[in-house]
Length: 561
Image (cartoon, rainbow, N blue to C red):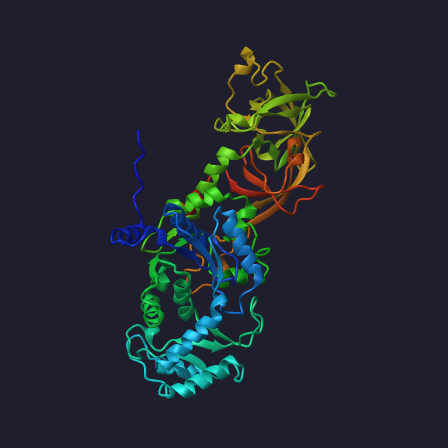
């Protein structure tokens, strides 16, 4: 039975229509154009998956282009991080491009616009320009410098380039229409003076092109066919086309800008400015903090490229913005890790259990299945001894019938091992339980095939042998914000919604098979969640990050009125 073909999204419909009209499929080209002023986040991941996904679908090249026109905010560190993120997500770009590669050509084209009478140097202050630009309901008025001669504009523009003027004294503006209902068309700025060193061109330039001038022309230079932007750039399309109208060679491919909606993620922020605040205020431990929505943060937390690609495919491409619940992202990482992550024993809140009828000096090595979802994963050996750790919350002196874990007089099965019965417990001077004394049924060993091994008890607990257990640092990460839309409140700062319990650091105990675990190895701690080995681990100490719990622990909280 053949699979039902997937329906096309509206971007694919646009491309299919172009192909149907005779556009050559061999000429298709896409691009992903990040600005290197911060680390990529989950929103960028959707754009990466869209553009590179189209490249794969249509067997078309995809450029990675850095929109590096603002030396104040951009750094090589961000360039390197972006390249690493795209590679990690599983994509390969055709050509690595930089807007700064085109500075000379953009400058030459800007001079052509001046010569055509379509650009001029404005010497107003930024405040004066803001006033003369008008409002959405009132037209603007022409700058007093709009009538400068071509020769004067050329001389001033060259002087700007040569560093003769200070920042803020002059800008180059396109000469379009100060009464246009689209305020972006009211003589937009093309160049400003910035006497700052650039991460690639150093101090070769002291004027830098604006985004709107650079972006469409870069698409044209690279012969990108479909320039896909998020919805906030829809008003920019008219200006994108105006610049191309005045520069394009009609023989060459003309890029087409089309917009899709952002998919905002609940319980987080994705504004680079706000993410930078979190870093600078020390509310997180850098851009790759596992609580951050950055791709590097998700990677460090234990997310897989497959889970993020599957998430992007599920939410799809739309024309209207909405908020996607972060639980959908968590669903995809659970689904993938369930298939690939080995199961191991770990205890995070230990309570000592002594099996009084197990010989003191004995130790038994049991067979444990590595992953029931993967037959090829095989088995490992698990040590069983007289003294064990279980989770403290898995024992009560007294409990009702709905408590299926260990209680005095009750039985449970230890995973992969035996059925035990709680006989008594020991307490300290403050009444805290410090030890539980149990007996075990030696004929109830899991997988032995004996009638006793098939005996049913309602509870099964995870555990570790105290003598063999490895102490490890465990970082219990949770959502960084308590509110679904922390930056959606006009009267409150997003930082007010920081979750004080977004990180708890504890000492846990894991089975000895994890001694050889490597950085980024992923595991399911049975009954507890999915964890991965953090890069802070050393030969003497393993550090584990909780990627996600086994179940959505926020579901009930989010449903509260």
